Image (cartoon, rainbow, N blue to C red; front, side):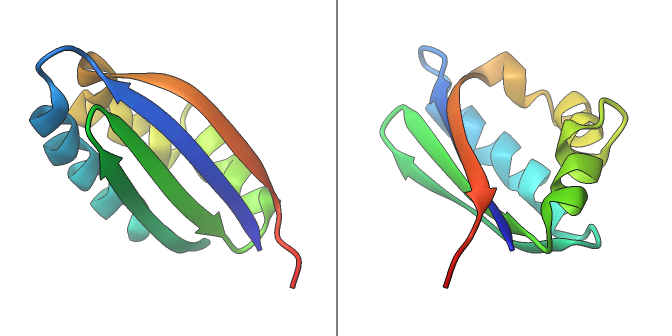
Length: 95
């Protein structure tokens, strides 16, 4: 399994908007083949997205491809208008 933990900071006054928009993005991504798990932890102005994929190839196809499901969801729901990406940690999980 390939996991990613990404942090986003809500722009001033946009924390509720981030919650709503990120919910819409999660719903779209969860429906994609290869997504194992996707949820978000909200702590004030910071949203931490925890997502898992069947493998790195699924992640690359869905998230890193500029025409992939993630890019389409971000464009459709405008999450980047309400939040700035801070950083991500990603890699293959070990049991």
